[in-house]
Amino acid sequence: MELFRPINSYYDFENIKMVPEGDLITRNLSDMDWMYQDQEAVQELLKEDPQIYRYYNVDIPEEEGHLQHCISIINPGKVGNEYNMTKGHFHEIKGTAEIYYTIQGEGMLFMQSVTDGEPEFEALEMKKGTLSYVPPYWAHRTINTGEEPLAFIGIYPGEAGHVYGEIEAKGFMKLLIEKDGEPTIIDNPNY
Ligand code: F6R
Ligand code: ZN
Image (cartoon, rainbow, N blue to C red; front, top):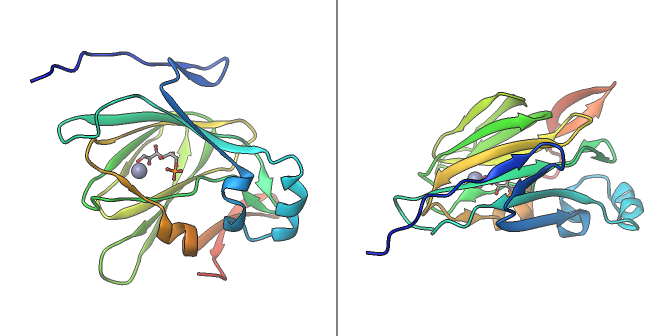
């Protein structure tokens, strides 16, 4: 058996990145433009195509027994009145959970159940120091409601895998918009 060696990663608070970078994945608006409601705002912003978020995956085997971990950073900003957010996904092995630990900024964690029954919805606040548990069978998306980057560590079973297609097509049942200066959860009219 080949032994995997212990490793450290660091969060560089000043430069807002993980060191070493590992596998860095960036998502610009053009990677998810159809996921926002206000398509006029999307077209305007696409001229610059801002980065919405990025995540640094530590290079760990995607195997049972290992713990995948990564640091995600969502830039502050909105598309129309909808806050910057991740695409969102559920795990290919739906019965695998995840821990998020917020290290910087503030936002919300949207979750939607993916059992055979009617989907249920939950939202949790995220701020520096929040330890959030995403139990098995919950799709998850994170949203930056603050003025600085929202950064959090995610830890999940090596074998979990990711499914994006269904959420890419339908979104979550709720949206998070700014209304009267406050983050407000509303029904997604297109769900
Ligand atoms: C991994 C996980 C996070 C996200 C990351 C980007 O299971 O939940 O590390 O992968 O925050 O979000 P998505 O994957 O939805 O683009
Ligand atoms: Zn996940």
